Length: 376
Image (cartoon, rainbow, N blue to C red):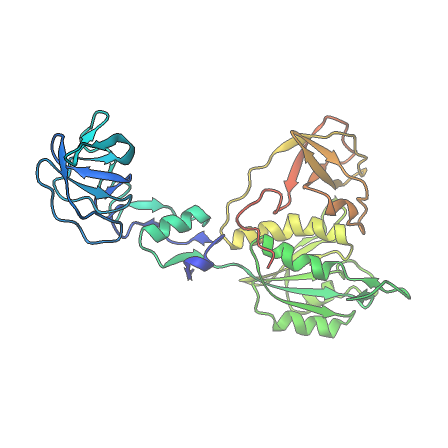
């Protein structure tokens, strides 16, 4: 756990209960602009008023009133607060109500919301803007929270360009720009993005030098002549937890434990295949490291039928239209055109899905508008 200042705690998970450090409110306050009155009407109004942030005014005597602002301390012996629109003054300057006055009306009594020491929120609560507000009101300057998982990204491949148009067998790197903000949207603290060619030695040095909670690699997870991820994992003695998944695109994805507190997710080099691994391996791991709750799974019917793989699950970009999911075209492993327009991925079982069939849907982090969405 870390002690995070309130302005840095948004999206983190509480690692200690939030307990009230004071009564809320900590003194009797006015809930409205108007007059604090004592006893039955009519009332003589004092010259000075009671304002928020000022010291407690002198006690009222029976038949006396004082102008009061919302949030101001209520004088002792106050019977009620009369709203500005519910009072009138006569020619002698005395205050009269225009409707019945109920004892205690429009007064927020001390400890109405909580008493000092009350349990407000449990461990595991995600810090939302409302949680920040409650914490500040309850007297907190910092929150004890689970820190964001630290992530290093290693982009592999001799064929990748970082600028300009593809040429001479070279292609633009799509994953280098895409993965860091996506990982941040999943709650990660992305520390470095390192581009490495097809060089086993350089990959080994980068992996062994990292002290991140999670290393994410792109490409090199298959068994081609320059696919070095598996040999490097074997060389460092990693525990290979997931070595390929029956999903298209993305089947060469992998998950390895490098140390007790360090993992590596190997994403395929094809962009949409990398997205599959990002949502099905990296996201659950990051969520667990950050102590975030798992989203409730849900299904939606498909607008159109989708061809399936004979044996593997397919992940298809979809756009959500009301209570249905519409499959998008351009869903090949190397394509991002469909993904760029998508709200989610539909989980299509082996053999495909017909129009109207219910399929599980994996939301993209920015689609749900969650508080963890931060791209910077």
